[in-house]
Length: 453
Ligand SMILES: Cc1cc2nc3c(=O)[nH]c(=O)nc-3n(C[C@H](O)[C@H](O)[C@H](O)COP(=O)(O)O)c2cc1C
Ligand code: SF4
Image (cartoon, rainbow, N blue to C red; front, side, top):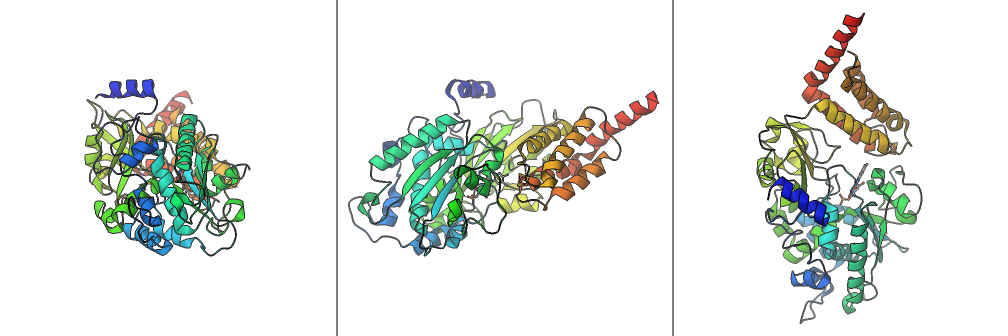
């Protein structure tokens, strides 16, 4: 299928970005065809077997239930790292939940997915919603939580509607609600949707929004594990993180770890976009060479060469082509190269792209999405955008690159949440790797100015 056919299909059917059959060892996207999302289809694919296993309710036999400690130990062993961006080990996060806390505790799924380039979670929810529901029930069991929410990005309401339908199916089948599968464990799960603000993907802003307030990040500490939703202990994970859990429980932590590479267990879904022949979501083992991922995505557009890659969503620093072609796709390798695997949104840029123009687009996004609480972020993101704007439009000054680096320095590490860092890092990386492109425009402006003097 070529890119035009894929885009035609996309326009005709919505978001069919994961049915191209070009995944390697998929677990989450395996055997999806766009229609087989219902509970009966999921059960036919082995769904809810992990839930039965932990509750001791396996088909045809009453078995010994797993203890909470056993479930958490299995997730720790798998080295499943959070797929929302930071790559924090999931089992460790679950162990922070004060299980003996006498009051209400909450579980939250972060399906806000606002990072530019990322489009994997909406496909999971649309085409395999029960895998997230099962993952959340298992997490709730492990941490002794009785109420959960899935916060779903606004603007994609068909995904929200689909998840609500799947929730009802699970309730009707006794998988959710009181005494799940006849066990002593009860868990109520609800869906909630945002209205498209990028900042509501930051976990504490999400909690504020879920409480019905303005979506602005909180100071940390205290962290959500002690002061989360409505001030109660709360665990938050990304959609893809929860979606990985059923496989881990069914097959064991070590088996999951073995699919990826040390310290980077399992598969990861990469949303490959930009200048490739076959954009889409690709699920591959952690540690897959970038060159292989690019090949799956049909390679760089015909007649073009690779210039650079933003490997983990718009906030991750850009990596030049030659360096990127040597890297593997996992948290540690990308971090060693000075960037981040982030949410797994791989934005491919070919030699037709001007980096000043690309940075202009990115800086505008961050200045638009700043929530405005901290002065360095509120003022600095707009300042960086205006400076890049004047360079791109031929009015750059020779001191502008130093100025941009200085503004970025004064944002990074000085704000309440990581949006400030996310805005600063692309600016520094673009200047570091592609300085001549900025200098050429600034020099042209200086010479025009001299000619008019
Ligand atoms: C500005 C900003 C936006 C974020 N957006 C998302 C998002 O859309 N989805 C997500 O899962 N995590 C997002 N995160 C990360 C979350 O704060 C949090 O770390 C994550 O949901 C934890 O889940 P994990 O441990 O499974 O990765 C964002 C963080 C920041 C600073
Ligand atoms: S860093 Fe930016 S987005 Fe985050 S709290 Fe501060 S102003 Fe808001």
